[in-house]
Length: 368
Image 1 (cartoon, rainbow, N blue to C red):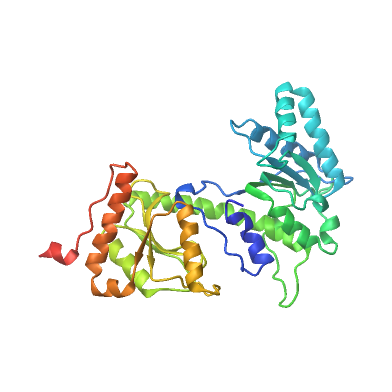
Image 2: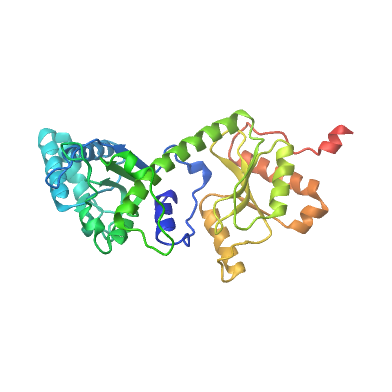
């Protein structure tokens, strides 16, 4: 998965937050959440949901119209819905020669050394398959009288939760979640009693709720970035972390006081950047990342080995990193800030961006 949010749900529900996902560089921040939830409003009868099947075909059509179409996988929650989706795709191809050509090409697509063609499978048969985009038809919904029953077939059987975990982690780039389950059923989930394992039905509801909350979080983040761009990127945001660092927060506050905003504790515990400095022009971008001392990741068996690994991973993601040692910061905070400013200016010049912000100034010096 190329976006940590695609596996965050599974990390929480199945792996007790033990996974340390690789956070993407802020310049690659996605405007919209990588899980797109579509309320189809269909009905479920005789094992099928025709409205959802049509929505799935529409998403496939839109994806294949792109200049560089992604690889696609489609999954449903039973065999009857799988067969219906295949039939709907074939019907659409018969009515549209251009779509027929695109669909045929997508079905025989090959990736780097392996088959990467479009597939349509039911829940039990999606195992090691990975595609750029995964389209999921949750299939179940109200009957023709408007009554919704929690009859989720294989999802309620032994191992149903594990199968759902496999399904929701198959996408490299994006999940399209098409559902007819009424929102009131999954927006107010009861907590799982301590010591009990959630069943497949509860996990499905939790995943639908996660998709909604994630979309709201992305929208809020976009608005926050827009506001940050308006205030000149002078604000300081401090994220929660399991390993706080007083020097990191102090340096962030010092720089923010001089008009250079940023985020303290960007990323996660395993791949944390102590201070990510905002780009002066691009709201969703940064200049450099400041690392203060060594990693504080408690899960590392060897802190030095993990620090080398963390640094190489972050640099591969596109980060320009600067190391600051806390004793030097205590002795000469102004010198450290000026050094950071010089690195930022070097970054902006290399980036060929003429819109740089003023160099760092000592407030006490200005008063004099």
